[in-house]
Figure 1 (cartoon, rainbow, N blue to C red):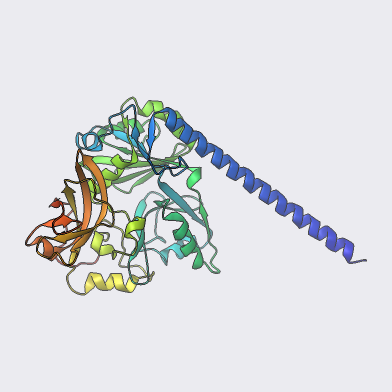
Figure 2: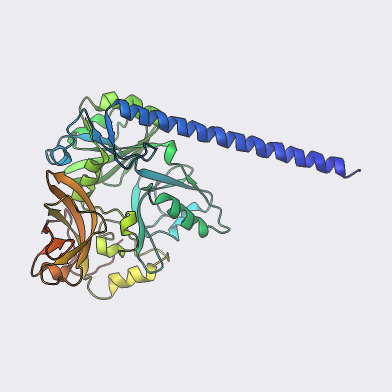
Length: 396
């Protein structure tokens, strides 16, 4: 009896503590759900048009707005500034004393030397060097954030968690704690000054303020692009101010600017299809060849240093609305096997789509490239906004 009373007290003490922690976590979850619900309701009130396959959840893809011109090619190519809610993007927060070291051993970029004033592209590969995800990463005072499409987030987080083992790292899905807005165009820079007096002055530079995080991305059509990561409340308050000079558009318009910038994104349809160099990822800063090992590092390094690369990614346009990420493309001179694959595609004009296509370079020398089959719609190959090296060289 002498031991039983202390043991019972010990049990009930920690049992009550566990209940309190669970209650706090539940309350936080309800708060986040309510916050995102209010954000989606606000977007609906602004005339947001959601995808037909969307369940209007937190990841609902906004296709456009009933009150605006949703012809993304006109909006982007004309140089008019616009902004778009990017609900389809998710965030994983990696915290803990060993978060940087852990991610450094998993991703293609140098995470250990990531500064608070910058963001970086990164890839996550299989042991065979094939990309499972392309990410945008940056550091805050207490975590490293990994931005990835929500469609890839759960399996990516689960796979990373498998390798945490005893490392002092905690991975958490914080997608519903933030809102992401994409802003593009010369007028976007002026509009952002109300919240960020000092704008990031180069691609992948980063600025912080009480309004959130602002990341400058690669320019498109000679115009700057930014991602603003902030609270739903702040985005709600900023909306009427932004609409004074910028046009609200859907996420497809933003993704079109990624295509114009030559920045690829892995989707569920293209997972494990490409070594980073096949989609120019080392050229745009997504691979660091001076860092230590990570899954697939040997294959990626071998592709870089041994022999000339035979496949690259190029922009293309096609007079068809059937182009989709993962679709095969064929040379007119070889109907038997594909010569490449669509990486990303978005509608750019009536009856036309702009694409990023991974191609055998040899197929570009003779014949023409076609979507789906050798007799399918022809792709018109464009020019990248950056140069492809003629021979392999180390990337920093």
